[in-house]
Image 1 (tube, rainbow, N blue to C red):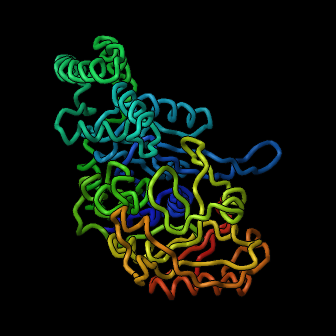
Image 2 (image 1 turned 30 degrees about the horizontal axis):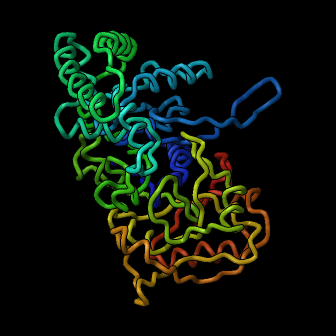
Image 3 (image 1 turned 30 degrees about the vertical axis):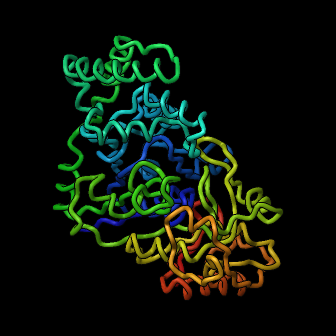
Length: 431
């Protein structure tokens, strides 16, 4: 029963979309297991036109990154919080591109819905002194309602009476809070009910028991790719709390987020950049707030796919990567954006931390310790040659291969794949 999990091994934005798209050529089902429209997975697809083939970039937020392969069925699992407006926009954009959606997209009836008040509450908090740097898409408040057992699920759209009862209770409570604390205008219950019942008409054909579908597929020996959003260091349990996302991007989240058994997991792939980035607030030990950070940002196009925010950039952090390998059970790594380092004379990798003068090789997840870290670096010579045109691992510059192999040796983990650009043909298998 082959399920392969693709997990972000850093703070998200590692290039999971490209890796999932690349692997989907030999996969039957791609299933997204957590997060919401706060994720942005960028995929570059070759498109045939009157003047030949051109490569076009697409950004997906909810629909799994396997959608550009016609034989792949895409699943949005119960662990995802679903924004119907964002989903319909994404579906329409894909249709205009000629991508067939019907019969290829399935949505869990148990997925929770993001409501207008979730976005409102999220944005209010991000304008306060309690902000943590979220995307403002309502993700956190939706997960709060889920665990408070007051959330609205896709299945609730089927019965207007049930929907009305739940929404009225929720909105009355939210209105009291908004008017008392923020002097905000009241939300219109009837308008929200009507809006979401219209959404129901549009998404009804995709809604099913996706856990049953996936388990039936496993019995048929179908190949399934479980796609995570964000990254392990943003996991609500195992990340740099409280500067984390509201779900479990780690590999353990795949089983609960899709309703599949742990015994079905056969492989866990971690995706990591050749350097490090982070969006939003929170500790970032190897951050370079200098010319190096700006070079990484400019060369790598490091701006959020969802928000456009500039990403914080720094050297590769092997301490945090070792931690991510441990908590996820990562068996092999896909390294992305190696080409961004092409022009550097020397490249640093963080091999240990110093906290109050003491050398530390285990990643501390408490913010107080992380804020006191002094990184200990190993310096490697740069290769000063263009790697984006290389099409086999053995033809990479010697120093580029030395960088990859040094990282693999220090991590004691196999680097399985290396990406030297956004296109499908810029993916090298490490033999």
